[in-house]
Length: 191
Image (cartoon, rainbow, N blue to C red):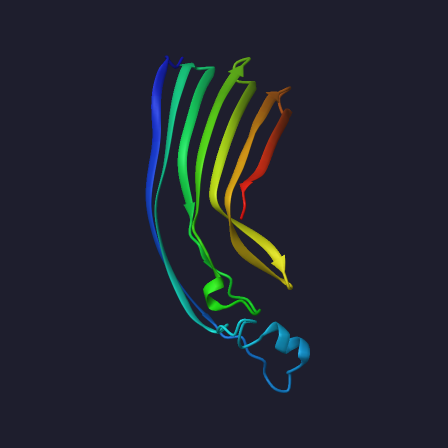
């Protein structure tokens, strides 16, 4: 039997990333056509350069903290707080976007979670439940534009929900699993 106790799971990660991109839209002869020239122009509608080299750097410190409280061998409660990050990049496909408009920024998240796990019938039945909330800042949102995906940043996106799961062993070789989840994603701010 496991006695009542508290433990702590933590993690920290430092991240640095440098990205370079070279964009060279061009139409080869004899492939030139009105459609090809529209999809691969040399300049943007404002006259800014479409082709050239771009670079960017990202650094981030991410972390996670999860205290777990085990009341006895059949019930455990936990909470998690975490900060995550995803580096930005460039939209380097064809099109008339100027070089300065091809970059998208880093995405960061704040994640919170509360949960419980329980077992009964000598471990033959297991139950778990989790409620969570994740706040995305500068969410990297991909849209399909002119036959390709383009990524931009939405200022704030919130995700909240819960998950419930159950497992029961019935008989020597049969197990029943049930799960339900709900997730609600909202664009809190998108400019």
